[in-house]
Image (tube, rainbow, N blue to C red; front, side, top):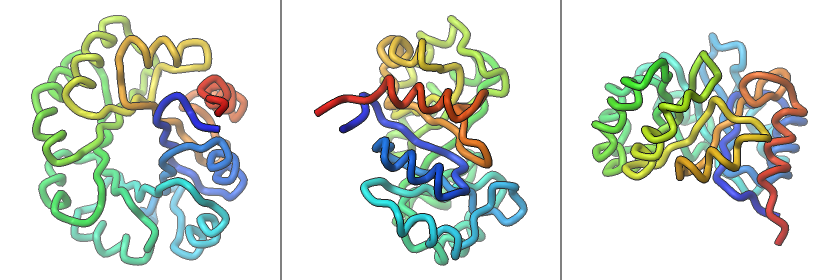
Length: 208
């Protein structure tokens, strides 16, 4: 079994969620590595969870840490393949490391996407994947064409405004690389519960 699109799961902090998502063949699994974060995963807990998994890659997720601190922290997480950050200015300090990079950005209005379109060539040149989230949790109609324009210029993971009923249409209309769903204490696709995330993954299943 495979999925119709690329899928990242964020903020995973327990084995049951991790094993379920790995069994659904998601591509990336993210773990928060900042000690002050409520979803923080210690090196021992990370090892305990990941030793049960196979067939996917792992993301070290950071919100506020300086790149120097990030690179020191990930030394304790040997299996990390990607580093996810929020600060665009920090990219230059990480692009020459062995890690793949994900830049998470909050989308409040069309101007935010337009800014990303402007910097997209540089992101693509440095193999940076964009992860877009929004506190509004809706995908406004005006965003669709902008997301398509952005996805033509650099890889994009969409982390808001999707559900089981809309995900296939959104993928077709925008041509994005894939989607990002949130885990945590009760795994959910950004807005509801485990069933909502499971519904989305089941819609994306491809039988081989």
